[in-house]
Length: 122
Length: 106
Image (cartoon, rainbow over all chains, first blue to last red; front, side, top):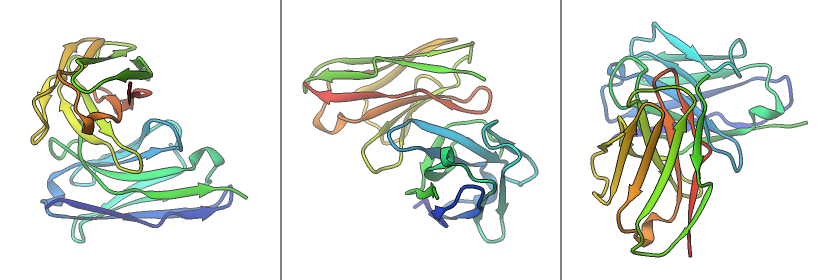
């Protein structure tokens, strides 16, 4: 059974940093691209970042480029997202999500974690 | 950036109704379109991918159609479990989600 378990969310002040993690199990982790998707309260999902199965290619939404960094450890089956220079508009539930199709980030997401809440407020 | 526009934003329907939701892309995305269902407090659930392919385990009353810039999600006979919010997603260039359609009980 595929499982994705996020952790690391919390309350942080504007300008602060946070590191989110996602522990994956139940599938061959290295074979699939992974993404982070966030959802602000009452809003639709917003894709944030993606990483190829090998970890060699990364992609970011313009709204987070230069502030967030995605990474993966294929030996530990974990995905991470480093969030720096946080703003109030980054407040959202952050989900890790598995790509349906394979190692290149080109596809919808067939499995999602339960999400971790990041609140940016003074 | 590719913008995705869903309509309507809210839809009131009864059990047994046929329901259609529309999603328009700001530029052609071929068939790189997915549909998700989301219930309060839960992650989105993949229903349809590549515009018309049914995800494994999803009931056959859900169907998708379209290509280019205009797409539809149809629920042939609405069931009590189907009252939820539905989102389209383009994955032709990176990924963008629509604003959502909430299906409410009439």
